[in-house]
Image (cartoon, rainbow over all chains, first blue to last red; front, top):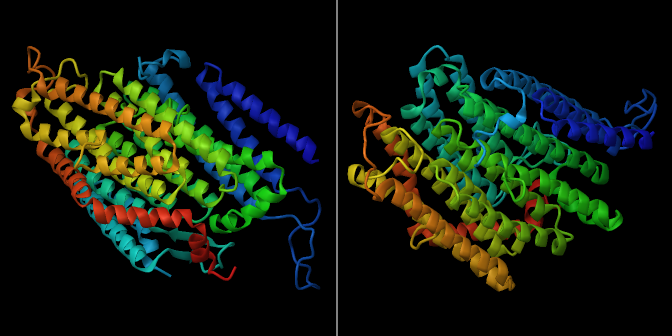
Amino acid sequence: MEIILAFVVGGLFAAGIYMLLRRSLVKLLIGLGLLSHATNLLIFTAARLTRARPPVIDPRETSLAPPFADPLPQALILTAIVISFGVIAFALVLTYRVYKTVGTDDLDQMRRTDAP
Amino acid sequence: MSLWLILPIAIPMLTGTVATVAYRSRAAQRAISVAGAVALFVAALGLLLDVSERGIQSAQIGNWPAPYGVTLVADQFGALMVLLAGIIGLAVALYSLASIDREREAFGYHPLVHFLLMGVCGAFLTGDLFNLYVWFEVMLMASFVLMALGGERGQMEGAIKYVTLNLVASTLFLAALGITYGLAGTLNMADLGRKFGYVAATQPHGVVTTLAVLFMVAFGIKAAMFPLFFWLPASYHTPPVAVSALFAGLLTKVGVYALMRVFTLIFVQDASYTHTLILILAGLTMLTGVLGAVAQNEFRRILSFHIISQIGYMIMGLGLFTSLALAGSVFYIAHHIIVKTNLFLVSGAVERVRGTFDLKPLGGLYRSRPVLAILFLVPALSLAGLPPLSGFFAKLGLVQAGLARGQYVIVAVSLGVSLLTLFSMMKIWNEVFWKSSPGNPDDRVKAGDRSVGLRGRLIPIGILAAITLIIGFGAGPIFSLALRAGEQLMNPALYIDAVLGGGG
């Protein structure tokens, strides 16, 4: 399972970076979204996958017997999802404003602020 | 548990919230903003004194014991950074009163500044890598809005680059976090510092090095290190001057802080590789930054490129990796934050008087505004490192440390770069203040408007210039403070004991 997820994560990163390198603003945004998904899956995978062993203490026991799934990475991912949700929402609005102000969605046209 | 640790985060949060609630009244927002900035400054000073007196302080929020709970830590370095954030926050809050237009104020400029300060202080005080990520995001979110607030074309173009590259950096940081957790099973920095030696010994060499470089790239983008700095000169000159100054003073330094924290506490096993890499990048950062600045002809763009060049000096101390070198870096950061913010504020005052940032149409300001000229000269010469100003002692510490380590190339580069910095500051001086005004001094600002709000701008500039002089003339005690910070950074055991309580 880890192997499959590793390929999924790698594929998402590659797709995200490819999208970032395109000239269109919308694709840039999609690229950022893909990167954040890739990262969330990476955290999930890097912290080991444990199937069907929830970290819940059985009423008859007093402590958890390993192996059990680590809940912490999922808390991390949840936080990261919320943050990336906010950030992507902001970026979406920003993209729209940029399009309205600059009048194009071609990133190559937006070089007025670059150093000459 | 020390209350001082919580105040630098709680005060900006409270100020920002109250200022948001008071959005109807411009006067109330302005008063709250300044009051909050003063309170933050006082709290930061209290924290620094507390840490100087009693050593590294830590607190576990919610009383969960150390590796599990939310940890706040302040060592000498962190506390000093919080104080600098407090000073810059106050200077910018005062400057904003005179310079920010009503429209931006109505759309929440003041609360955003304080939320930004909350993120910055949180990043300096947290003892947990994941919380560092969260504070980064708090800071970035506020900075994104401040960057774009106003919606001018230049701002929009700058913002899209700024947002994209910072989000990529955050993603890389988060990926590095995930791998770290997979390797070590903890994200508490002190706990990582304790366990990472074992991890590095048992894991394949390449995995740990890759991880270290991943952190280096993620923080390097935020710190505008070579070759990851391109977002900075493309965006920092676009927002209003108060925002530029706030960003120039604090944001990249959060990246430098994170680099210094991670590469003194966690990734110290393979210093001959990672820290040498940092040293090489430091030299290249200095050189490309200053060469970029020499080629520019716009006040704020020159200053933006100088930020990059100065970042090189800060990480040079980290690359040399001795306690003297780290002390030099700490001192350099303190000096740089004050001076660079001040130079941006001066550029804003010049723009107020003459209506442009371009060097060509400016001139003759020494004759018409001598006070402004002197106030520019203090931070400018300090940036170039002329004695007895603060920049001289900062560079002296780094050069001494470099010579002691026998790294003559980096010392030569750093001295050469200072000469070019002096050249570039003299270019601004000649063009803006010394040469006679080209033709029509009228132009973009009506004669009646030129002094409007100028005094309000000069007050924070004067305060920061005075601090530069104080750091310069009082270099002894401040350098000894930096030395203590450097020693604490070189002895991670002190930090680990303060958080985990010795026994662990």
